[in-house]
Amino acid sequence: MAEVDIKFEREGLEGVVAEGSYLIDAMKRLGVRLDGVCEPQNEIHFCAVTVTQGAGLLSAETSAETEYFAKYGRGDNERLACQTKFERGGEVTIMTKEKKEEPAAAADREAEYRKEFTELPLEKKISSLLQLEAIALGETVSFVINSPFKVFEKAMDVMAEFGFKLEKEAKEATRPKEHTKTEGDETDGEGKPHKASHAKKPKA
Image (cartoon, rainbow, N blue to C red; front, side, top):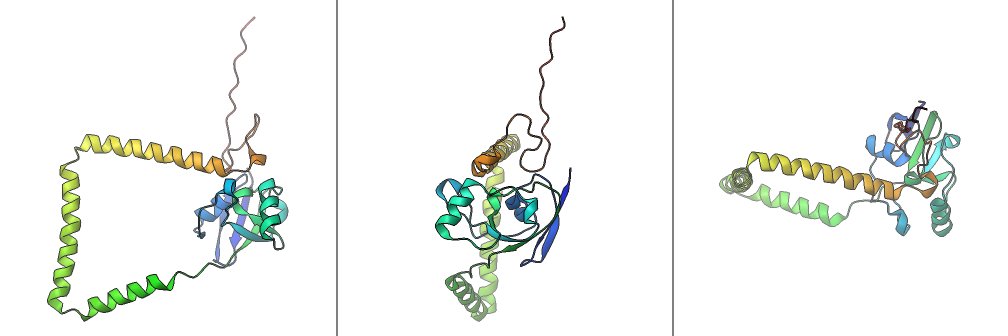
């Protein structure tokens, strides 16, 4: 299976992904952050990027992309990462959109808290820290005591399995209809090969 060398110019990140992977999955693996979660069914996307090199290695534009860009406008070589697959190996360079600045209110609250804590007398600083530790420790001890190990272990297994299932269903729901798996497909959308099952013919 061919490999794709991908580079994100704005973030200065680069890596290698398998042919058949989605662009949005490559972004997540390499640590490229998005401003939100895409909802293709509602025409909500946070994954618009510009392909500055290697556009010919990507899958054809989907109907969801056509509709989205017709409505909101489109730049040169702009694609939606959640709709785009790497179909051939080679080098691809991506320019992401400039991230929105975080609300100033959150930064102001943090700065105010730091200032208030700095101005506290040493005794009150120590007292505040000890109270926070006591609360955290108390919650942890209470949780462990009230949760038998076997039950806790089983619950974690169930939660993990349920989480994986939800993640898989959510991912499949965002995939473009043009990329729906058909009999004979060799990859699962992330570059992993499928093993086709063949029924054995009865002996004559």
